[in-house]
Structures are given as structure tokens and as C-alpha cells.
Amino acid sequence: MFNKYNIIVVGGGHAGCEAAAAAANLGSSVLLITMNMATIAQMSCNPAMGGVAKGQIVREIDAMGGYSGIIADKTTIQFRMLNRSKGPAMWSPRTQNDRIRFAEEWRLQLESLPNLDIWQDTVKEIVVKDGKASGVVTSLGIIIESDAVILTNGTFLNGTIHIGEKRFGGGRTGEKSATGLTEQLVSLGFESGRMKTGTPPRVDGRSLNYSKMEEQWGDDERGKFSFTDVDLPMEQRCCWITYTNEAVHEALKEGFEKSPMFTGRIKGLGPRYCPSIEDKINRFAERDRHQIFVEPEGWKTIEIYVNGFSTSLPEDVQLKAMRLIPGFENARMFRPGYAIEYDYFPPMQLDLTLETFRIKHLFFAGQINGTTGYEEAASQGFVAGVNAHQRINDLHELILKRSESYIGVLIDDLVTKGTEEPYRMFTSRAEHRLLLRQDNADARLTPIAHQLGLVSDERLEQVKQKVEAAERLVAYMRSQSVSAEVINPVLDQLKSSPVSQKTRLFHILSRPQVTIYDLAKADESFADLLSQYSKEEIEQAEIKVKYDSYFEKEIEIVNKMRRMEDQEINPDFNYSNLVSLSKEAREKLIKVKPRTLGQASRISGVSPSDISVLMIHMG
Image (cartoon, rainbow, N blue to C red; front, top):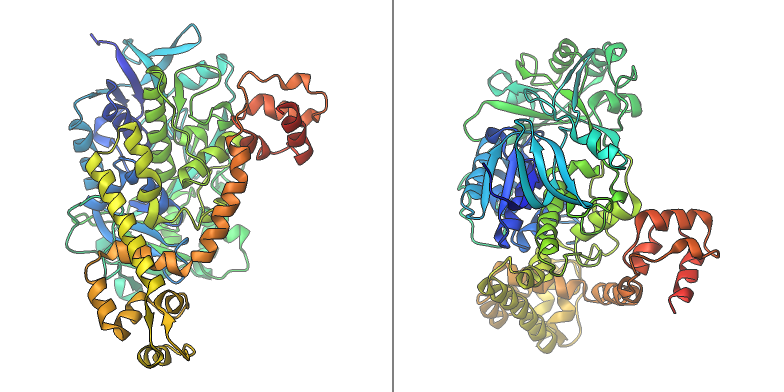
């Protein structure tokens, strides 16, 4: 029935979509198997993309030829650049999206790829021959052969949904769970665990009183994720903010005795940084209110996502408590919130390529690796898709360094340190976050994607022109001066100390109060010059000037670390023979199989003295 495929991708969520698209764009024949073609790229939880650190990931995926940013831009109902009041390392784009249109656009994108086929079915088993993944067996009893398999099962592996005392199987509300795969992988020697996530109720927007809430509009000056030209929706929708109160908290507490979290029915750990509402009022008992974001699910639907009210309490308790929130007095629920437990596989069983150690040509990506979030999943899917193609064609693998991308930080954290709770990306996880900004993702990663064959010569040239233009503008400001008579009136308005003589534009712009457009107000010739540059080129130049000394220090640190990062360790290195290593270090090194000394140094339990032993042994 089926011809052999180069790559089979199991699961049609965000990881699966990016994995299938990347592999297909590189030239592999790809089969994407999904349980339901109607829910490809479903936004199971919040209909939003990006946010703090997550927005940087979406821009990185886009810079490398992925589609998450483009799809998010096309289906945006509101755009905001978060953390604008902080430094550029913290600026994080976020979109509220039309849930239905997002899934539709992803499906249309996948259907447009000539090397990609889709099959609706459930995978029950991986075919393994000679230690390699060589196909799958579906619930229909069909055996489909392939050269590699990528598992992106999301929350479906033995998924169990909890609502109060009710418990039933499901990978998502209204959809059945997937069984069989976990059991097979465990029988092959893989270690598995359980994790938990949750989602809030959805309500009828017509039943809400928005006059009791605070309006939250998007940015007046629209931004976007993609570095390509994407037609953005002309308008934006309003979101709202309201708050819980003590009456809400007391109503929720009435259901605690039936809470699957507090009665121990849920064993898996949930995301610490995105707790349920019952967890919030239990852990932060001193707070008398919590913020609730009221977010539309699309342009035309009346469905509202109650962000901040994730819960697994009984549905009657949910409704009673929710109606005590200002603006929700007459709220009508479409469906209650719920918690879901699912199987995952601790990611220290993976190489940096996301290929498993135990079974060659088998890759894991997304929540199966213990992560949470569309963006984290999509980035892993992209990397797994690229590496599956590279692996079966004996081509150079894609491993992004921590100093190159948030995606590199994410994957290095997972396979080096592992995770026992749903892993979520934060800017604080990246030690070089000033270099890993959202605005320069194309300069960092598009050249790498071009070498792989994922982006065109034309797109690479556009990136080069942008970088060169910003450098020319910086060079101009280094070389040109402005007189005290011209610049001091502007500095006075900005409450910045005056200068006593002609001063380089570069040094004036280095002041925190001064923007590049303030310089243009003072210097007409500079204003004429700026008009020849794009908004992105001007922004790049301004950031380069303001953070010049910081960049130098960061680059110096990266260069110092590069010696260890570039010092590769033979994958067959026998740590058991190094008696000078501590017992814990030997066990961890054997388990993780680090690629480099740098990666080895980040393994929990491996001390600096252990690294010294390795360095001496390696000469």
C-alpha cells in the first residue's frame, strides 16, 4: 500500500509540523502520521505564540527557514513586544492568534510541500531492525517502512485527563490517547516518566461584562516574527485583564478535597512557572488576588480563553468561582479546564542531534522530551527534522551552540542536565542572552540554514545587506561629530548633561536617555542619512552603539569558552578506565555521552576537578 519513505514523523503538533516540513524541504520523502487531520498544529492551550524567550525561539526558527513565525504572523489578532522598558536582550515578541486559522494555515503549508504526504492513523509500534528504526506499525495493522522515525507525540502517550474526581483517557479533550509506544520503548530499555500540564476553561464571550475589566491593546507600531515579507492582518483585537479576589479563592478551596492534585491522583509534575489557579492560591496564600488575561480565540469566534485560570477542579467549582471574578458574573462555560498526565522520556537518553542513543535513526522532539510550550516543541521538531535527513544521507549534523541560539541552549539543557518537570525557556537560562536577541536571529542563524540548503541565496544576501547597512551607520556615527551648540538643546530637553565641545555622534548615542532619532532632530544631515535606512537597520545600529562595550565582553567570554566547546570527545570514550574521576562523574559521563569538554562541564555531578582529569587524559 505504501512505498518506503525516507522519514516518518509521528504526531501532527507543532514539533511534528516543523520536523516534517524541514525534512521535506531538504529533499527527503516524508510521511506525517497524525491521529486526526482536522487538528494538525492545534493550539491545545493558549492561542498565542512567543512571549519572554519563546518569542526569540520563534524568530530563530524563522531565520532558519521554519514556518512557525510565518504562520503566527498570518493569523495574528494582536501583536505586542514584551519588555520594551528593559534592555534589548529582554525584548520578546508575542502574538495572540486565531486558533482556527493557525491550524488551517499550517495544514495548507504542509499540503503545499511536494515531498510530504499525510496519513491519518495511530502508530502503535516502531519497527526496529539491526538496532535502527526502520518504520512503524499503525493501529490499522499497516507496516510502513522508512529510513528514520521522529516521535513527536505531545501529551498523547497514555494520556489521562483529570476533572475533579473524574478521570478518563485522552491526549486532549475530545481526542483519545495513544497506547503501545511507551510500553515498546520501555521494553527496548528506554526510561520513561510521567508529567502533567493543564488548561483553563473556555467561556462564551457574549456572557462577559468587559466594562469591569482593563483593556489591553496591542502595539500601535505592528511588529512580526518572520524576517520575510508576510501580509499581516490590518487590524488587531482587544484583550482584557481582570483579577481574582478572596471570594474566588474561598470558592476554589471548597473543591480542594476533590482536586486530583491535592488528593494524589495526579502523580506527574506540572510546570512550576505556569501553575494552576488552585496551586497559586495554595502556594501563594499571602496574595489576595491573581491576574486573569481574557483573550479571544479568533477573529470571528465568541470563544474566550481565560488565561491564568488553569484548573482541574470539578466543573461546578470552576464555574462558581469564575463567576465571582469581576466581569464574569454571568459567564457561560463552553468547556471546563482540565489537567492531563502523559508519558515522557527523560531527554538525557538523547544525543545533541535529538537522536536516541539506544535506537539509531530514531529521534524524539517536543513534549515527549519533557518540555512545555509550542515554541520549545517547534524548535526541537525543526532540529530533529534536519538531523534525521542529514543522518540518513551521511551529511553534517546540525548542532547549535549555546552561544549561537536559544534553541542551542534548550537542547543542550535537555540532553546534558535532563528535566524532572516540564521545561520552559526563559532568558535567564541563556548565559549569552545579550548576543541572542530577537532582532539579530537572522544574522546569527540564516547563514547556517543557507549552508544546509534551507534558505535561498537571495534571502542570505538580504541578511548580509542588513548587517552591512547597520555597520555602515555605526561607522558613520563613529567618524562624525556634532557641535555643542547644535546638540546641547536636545540634551537639555532630555535632561542629559551638556557637552563642552564637538563630540562624536557615537558617544552621544551611548547615553541611555538619547535615541538615534534624537540625534536626527539635532543634525539635519544625519536625519537625511537615516531616511535611507530601514527601521530594522536603524534599530540594529542603535543597539550596536548602546551596548558596544557589553558586546565586546560577551564575545571575549564566548571566545574563552570556545576552546572547551570545540574540544570534541570520542563518543566511544571509555570513562570506566579513568579511576581518577569521581564515581558520580563516571556514571553521569557514561549516561550523557557528552560531545565536547564544554558539554561535559555542564553535567550535574561533574566537578571542575573531573574536567581537569579529562583534559589531562586528552592531552
